[in-house]
Length: 98
Figure 1 (tube, rainbow, N blue to C red):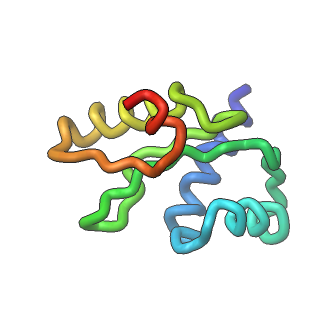
Figure 2 (tube, rainbow, N blue to C red):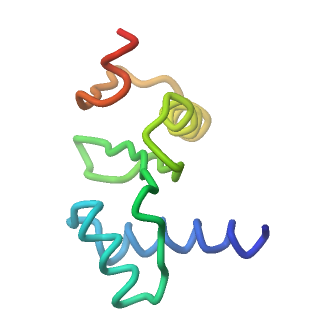
């Protein structure tokens, strides 16, 4: 289990440093080809990016896009940065609840 957590942190770290401008599909391909890390094709990466700075402020991997994934990144944002002025979302699973 510990190795898995370290791998997740490593993936987030290298995304921020090397692959920040890649789509998630391309990123998963680079992980396999360049980093020798294979992630499930069904894995969903939930991510929150600050529009003003381009910084990733929250990330969470799950087996598919889930409301729980968005709860997790929202928790990361609130505990790390505090209450935000605005949160914009894509047309994913959150649009089904609003």
